[in-house]
Image 1: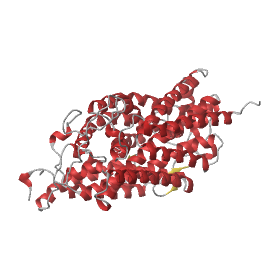
Image 2 (image 1 turned 90 degrees about the vertical axis):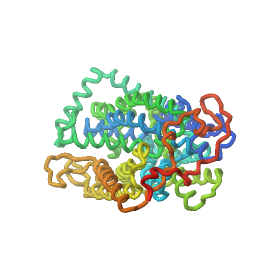
Image 3 (image 1 turned 180 degrees about the vertical axis):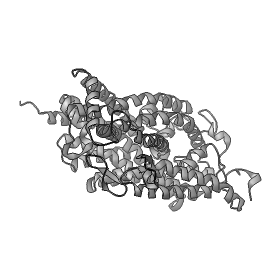
Length: 565
């Protein structure tokens, strides 16, 4: 029997692991199965009952996506230190999450909210504002799903597979098990994903450490390469003109991450505040794995790795292909593939929940049953996944990346209503809407003004508009070579207008909305009689309690009776 070549070994290992993951995804529908999975709370939030271990794997699978593990090392490969921005932004984001998301968990469990848009609608007494938040969430999430496909596509390219049918089969499997199992599917599969990622990190450390000299020549050669290029924005250390963009990009990315609907969906699946906080306190350790994987960018320079066909996203899989045994490379490829399936599934569920609860039920079928809601959400989750697949197959991949740049700016505009709304109801609903509109307008104008640079010196304009998210300050006459992240400027405009216009609208006699929440709702925890309890705990003791009817937050409590007009 002839020996298999490396690509065949890689494909066999990838297929076996992918097959195991598919079986687990379908089996998740029977994993501590509740009495009735035909409700949005069970299908879309896993019964709001995940314990410590499941929550950890779900949140890590949600935050650390395949595109992160593929694109960020590629950025390091191209420009060096500036590509490390995800490390500080993840350091920044977890304290923010620890403080904010426990309040979000409590108020959503008290009232039975499934989406952030439902919370905003109740908090500020405005159906229209809730709809805006839902639409922005869906728009921002769609290109994010498409980006996960780019990671799988790069792996298939390195394994010598064609572009079309393998990617279609992979996402067909994802779509079907998500349809069947809901959030339980990616929650169970994320355990395999994290195991494979940790294995990949160990491989990077061992492969480089076993080379003569270990890591020292890797950094030395990377520094020599960046010094020799005519570019001024690359280097082993951060160039001075890149510092402003680096800081604002890290800060803006941190803000955007916890506002994305898929992050909030993972949060709402936790069984109590303690579970959520423990995991948010531990998850920064996982950032170390991302930091190690980003070093592949430098290792690829040392090894002389070149992207296949000019596709920069193939740098990471190609480095493993050239430097690791075939079976090891196959496992790493599976880690990237599974790492795309988990967040893509959660993202599609989050987008589907937004459509179902905040558009379909609000405007088309107010009396929709729980079973009908779930069926609509399942159908929409299929639609958004296949829409993302068509974007990758029929359009240039750069199109999805450009859309994601816009998506980050879009989702940041929900911060005053969603995040600040967890602490105060002072904002006027019209001021919030005006701020969002102004932030979006400023963001789109600035993105339009950003050119895409290329060439050996990194300063040749290859596209005049929508070329990135770093807005050059020389656009307004500041000749410093520095740039700033568009999302931060757009959010600043949003916040300023929201704060300034709130008293203006009140003085004009325009009525506030009515707040349907109470102060105690934001600190309620498991065991509080106001907290909705599910009928099944997935990794704890089963709970057999009836689920109360959804709170009618359209007969709310006045926010400030003394200010009513």
